[in-house]
Image 1: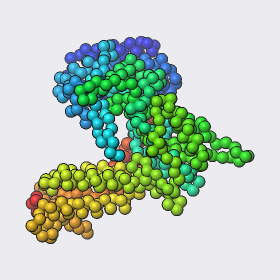
Image 2: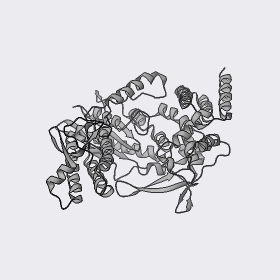
Image 3: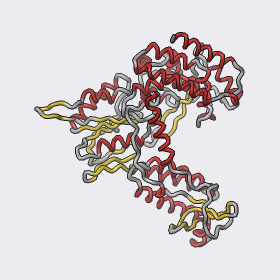
Image 4: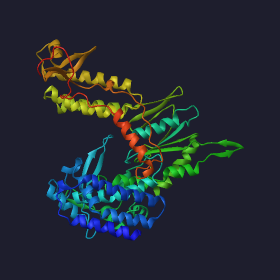
Length: 515
């Protein structure tokens, strides 16, 4: 019966591929439904440890017309759609997209070298990125659909980076639950893996990741083009590729389970003892908690051995053991206990980087633009940073950043009119809204009604506690569909709206023409 269903599905996919379909005629919703059904079956088979069935279903998915269509759509609709690889080819027309669907085949596939680009890191060093070709990106997106149901089923419970329906806010809420109580662990291991993406063992990936070994090896051994020279790749995943974060997660999965099995609740000297060892990980950054410093010293040795099997090493300069009273930084947040009260807030480093970003936008990129253009460039930056920290203790920080930005805008306006008085400049670039003065914006008329266009305030973003996703929740398990739907609907209700657009009409007295 199962073989019959498989042959029928293959015949249907083949017939779909043979049809002369234009790109605009494709029913993407129907394609998503078909692919999701296969992904659910893959996750179920993985949970039941039916590995032969997993392999058969994966093959069925990657050869289906619907999955290929979604893969092409993904690489032609994201931010990298205008960035070509080493072959300088872009899929920027509907004809190229539909031809690309038929070109995604396993037989005869050969991955082209990556185009190497170096981008600056926060510490002043350079991060190497590899840009695959459009076809390689589409193949990675295609096989990622078949790999994600497996990695989500086998992933660590408290792993939150590069996973569906999980974010940094979930990781911080997990830390808050573990560290906020009086009986919470007091010692923290701050872990950081040195060059995680660049040093993962190819042999380990090929032996342990449930994906087509032939295709995976093509990506891993594709090489890199830098300064017109071809360099071989002997280790690491192609950082910049679509599938690389998932491969990195698969490499590090098992870390939390190892620690939980080692440090269980046990009897010591006739008394029940809980070591309080917890692990939360976001990509290659992780935090381990414990009741004693000695336990973390032992844990560190275990992690070194665990990572060594995968070709990875801990960064000595970034891997530290600290007390909760001293505090630590994680994902741009500062976590510290003040008089037995846990406070999570934006870290000083993050605040400094953000003020420098605002200075760059105001004084370097928009030195001579119109006021409206400056507001349009600043609002998305403020909204993104504010929403990221809207679930922690950030109100004081938001007010501080607003004050700094207001002073920057004053300097911006004074520089434009050196021969005008301060009062004249204030009346031109700043307005009063309610009880607030020095609001950067202007009044205008919209459909004969008074309206204002202003710079948003970080202090106006509401602070709401984020509710962490359940550890065991799997987006490819049908039993969790109602749970994720409820979280999605709740997220839409609480998300900060996009205020400060010209289409928004706000009643105001004495509105003038646009300046």
